[in-house]
Image (cartoon, rainbow, N blue to C red; front, side, top):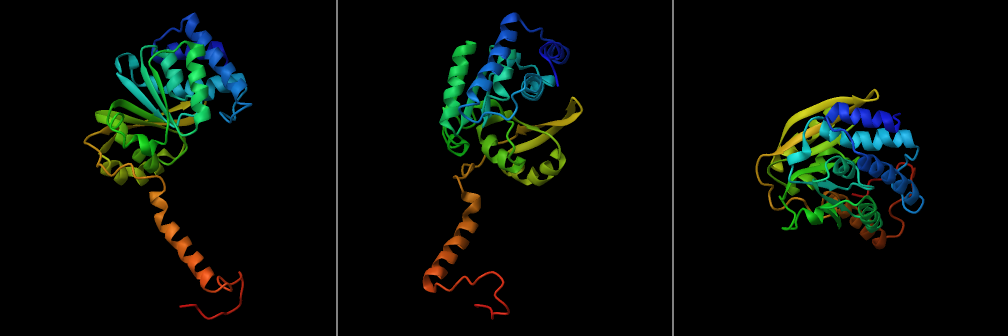
Amino acid sequence: MMNKQEFYSKVTEQTGIELSEKQKNQYQRYYELVVEWNQKINLTAITEEEEFYSKHFYDSISLAFFKDYSNVDNICDVGSGAGFPSIPLKILYPNLEVTIVDSLNKRIKFLNLLKDELELTNCNFIHARAEEIGQNRDYREKFEIVTARAVARLNVLSELCLPLVRKNGYFLSLKAQKAEEETKEALNAIKLLGGKLEKDLEFSIEGEERHILEIRKAKETPNKYPRKVGTPESKDTRIILEIIKLQKTNIKYPRKVGTPNKKPLY
């Protein structure tokens, strides 16, 4: 756990930035608004203040432990929910241009309220699926940095995020444990999408393992990626349709579970 004073000190220690009173008030108001709105829409399971400062704010700004964002042109945050990690990073670097993509309109409404309450500028919140935005010319390959703190596996996140990264920009994926396993699984997908894994930045927050996977956009992503929603499940869909067809043909099929020693249907 981390109280506010410990958070302020850790920020300075890790980034060299001493928070102003305005920034401290922004973080506090941010916390209050999330807790308030969490009663209306599901934003987080963490509402205790010290845990919130540690597991949301400090975890989010860990992106700045290894990079100075003062001169970063823009950042896109895919599926950020309540604004993590990009809004805590935006408070730390007020001039940073932030775009957030989220599929739930209620969360977008919350983020717009948050922007007004915290007096944030250069923030763009988009209600859409990442698969749609990745094929939109206004956003495709336009961002210096794209990040995601989502729980999806790295091969899935890479397909959603790398199309948005401009050439020689970076996709930064925040991961907890088992990052090595996910990375090995995703290497072929990353290469196919035009990326190259450059670093696995490993550190800990209060004894808990953390990773930032730094993936550089080495070449353009093939036009067919990201694929439409549900594409990976197309094989399963065909199987379901075949079962439905069989059921309509003869209502006794499929047979009950445990039917003994029946001859195969085919």
